[in-house]
Image 1: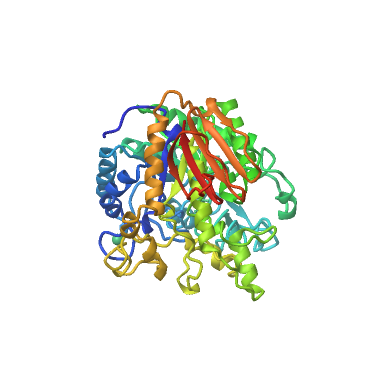
Image 2 (image 1 turned 120 degrees about the horizontal axis):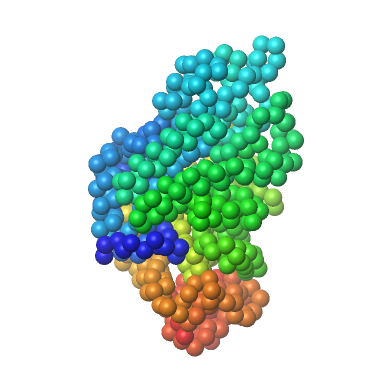
Length: 552
Ligand code: GLC
Ligand code: CA
């Protein structure tokens, strides 16, 4: 199955996110690589995904798992070469799988040639003008320009020793680009073309809402003042309106290809009306909808988030992105199995409980049953679905990594308060034994727990009730159903009345039932049962937690 030229492929694609360092290691050095991805193309094809999105594989000091890019047009030698990249794309395309790469335009890595030039050049030089440098405060300019803190903790300004500081929204090893600078703009157009010319089908745009900055105020507002400014035109760096000028320019680049290149923005804007602006057809075209990534396994919450997003799609002509897990968040099988602590993310809640001497009890069976149900639910919703590597194996978070192997800067910079994201990035288990469960011929760069053996691809392949086989059946059925003319996604989406604690919706003849909590069970309509995440009782009712698709 070779690729068709359908320009709208991204609208309902099942996209599989690969975190390259942790997917498959072809040479046994413990680090996943592009040749490893190529070797697993048959697996991806059998899984039934339409596209893969690769998290960064570029040369990087790995201060932030590769999101600190030192060279945007090359491959990290530990991960492979540009020739490996071309081979991987060819192998994926051969099996009809499209390729999305991650573009990180808010900041570079500290090792980027231009940042090194900026450090070696004097204040006021054109080299410094590519980044966000500013004079320090106080008589000897030794104080930071403001008291702002970085997203990973600690100050957002780093001194360079000559009275100037540079701004970093994330780690100090991730200096922010100055998007007012035409050279920076031109450079990213070159980068986009470089990958598009290589046949890449789309781009995931990292931190898409923060590129445009206005730091012209003197003095800068305090952190306390900034905290009161809503994301939007008045905020110094979140979701400013001018960011859309950048994406309009990019869209022209994307549309100069046949088929046009797709793009999806990582946008955390809370106001859905502002988030959707990134999904404009004159902009990126699609923007992540993270509602369900943060939500509880709760019927009312799911329904409200689904309604909100579908209403926006109808109004704007965009297409939603449903996502339950990614490389930045606790895996949903754990999220749904842990107790909540009010006001805290579950990652932090776990630490909060531990700090008080209370071991958080993860109900792993409940978490997995809920995760399977939620995954079936999102695969039936109109729009595209983003799946994170390992969720098809029912993997949960690896919570007990020793402190000294943790790589995520969040852990260090928060003084351990936030354990960080490594628990979702542990290399995949492919077989039940071997030094790294088939990930590679040596130990993996993050240690895998013993229980990974039960989730190994080889074990799940052999078990008809495994999560892997559930995903395969669901993705195959989804592809077949989406091909039917009467399943016109968002236009025909409809809720069907169902008891409290359950949801039931349909797209033409395709019904999706989700029982979150109802003890009484949920009655399926008459029809053919296509796939179910859980069993039906002897009364014929779907038990909780569970989801099922029925075609009438
Ligand atoms: C995005 C990425 C995350 C990274 C951050 C800084 O949120 O998804 O992994 O740490 O940007 O680049
Ligand atoms: Ca390797």
